[in-house]
Image (cartoon, rainbow, N blue to C red):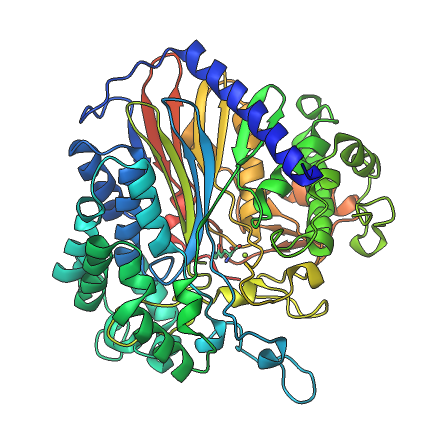
Amino acid sequence: MSRRRLLFVLLFSTCLLAVASATAKGGLAAPGGSDLRGAAIASAHPLATAAGYEILKRGGNAFDAAVAVAAALAVVEPYSSGLGGGGFWLLHRAADGYEVMVDARETAPSGVVRELYFDRDRNPIKGATTQGGRAAAIPGVPAALAHVAHRYGRLPLKESLAPAVRHARDGFKVDPRYARIAKLRERFLQSGVGTARIFLDGSQAPRPGYILRQPELAATLELLAREGAGGFYSGRVARTLVAAVNAAGGVWRLADLESYKIVERPALCFTYRGATITSAAMPSAGGVALAQSLAMLERFPLRAVSDVETAHLVIEALRRVFQDRALYLGDSDFVQVPLVKLLDKEYLRRRAATIDPKAATKSEALSDEQSARSESGNTTHFSVIDAAGNRVAATLTINLLFGAGVVAGDTGVLLNNEMDDFSLREDVPNAFRLRGGAANGMAPGKRPLSSMTPTFIEDDRGVLILGTPGGSRIVSQVLLIVLEYLRAPHVDLRRLLDMPRYHHQYWPDRIEIEPEGFSQEWRAELAAKGHAIHAANRRWGNMQVVFKSKRTGLAQAAGDPRGADVAWY
Ligand code: DON
């Protein structure tokens, strides 16, 4: 057995044991069927949440509900995720404690070469990875919908997709958030391929209340419902996708779609101060970053230090994990990722030991000598738990707002611009200002590194299911919620979500903070430690959380108050 596989097995079995004992202790013998006691759903759109509840009421389980929510989001939140995108689904099956990550990340098309994205002078071509056919990678969401429904659900795909089909065909009322985002991207949508016709009202961003209909998307969803993944990845839809992407400058082949496979991967599981945390596996860098940060922070007495001291330590941990990400992480099916080393307690102890509690380390001075060399608004997250305790945390995306701005022919499918999540060259940052190296370079069939971090936290009090959009800032958002959830004596979802957010990603070497919620003293004390502070002009993220109490068996859901804001870099 390879070391990497061994690590996964070890982590995975630890996780199963912890989960099994937690379930037994809680005694959550909740009734199944259509009983909604103990069930909860949090998503970025009320119609998507309602779609999930509708499916639970019809006797579906959390997995069926997740399929319904994801498909509905594809219709009512088209700037965030959809059939043209990808994502990660973290599943927990109550009956046997089985946990898995369904990796539905997009893959690079077989015709990809780096030269497509550079001009003759070796300068990156502006917009090549973010707009048009070259920006789009092979989608994974349709395969995931079919897979999750068939393998884990109780209902036929047709039933779980029905609410989405309805919203696409009959239309839905544009809400203020859609109106604002469409306004922000009005020019992008006007100049995109097939986008104005669908997402604008005439050539203008629609106003709230406008009924947005997507009959072509409804037909594609129905085909998927009837024929399963084959209805999307082969035949007429697939041919239309290839033709449209290539007409917009892409290099897709039919075989890229026909051979697309979702991958089931053992979830990343670890413990932090007595809680069991299950999170995204590679090719998301999010779970690894969370595990590394928490292992470093476990070495400091966080309860005994001030808010500023805590922020300093969190930032220094983030600085180090984002350095590791830039140096070593990439699709582990393609490159050797030294995961064993990166998650090794001794390695993380040495990394933590370089943190000076009094002063900021300059990123450029952060040595990677003792490191592991030896071996990315708009995205959506939803959390679901059903009465029986089955859970889903899913973060899905088409990357930037309205993805690549290409709707494929008459399919109604808006394509992602996930190619921007690859690293073009060490000196070329992506849309989230992330830099990376060869490990995350483009290659045919490869999955770009992601920050998406769907996560479960279990402790004596219950289980928290969480995740958020926000590009590279996903990692710090999840980390801050985990720390606060475990620090506070009572579970108060509103408080968790209201907390102001800060972020650091190694490069640029500065703390990014939300515009409100940080006092002058807080800023001054961190500045005195040598940190540069950059206040963003907007808040970020759209965290969707569900908490189920072990004591009462009751579940509650909460959405980010920032949901109405537009997170943009
Ligand atoms: O996979 C990633 O990390 C990015 N494509 C996620 C993009 C995102 O969260 C945009 N939201 N603000």
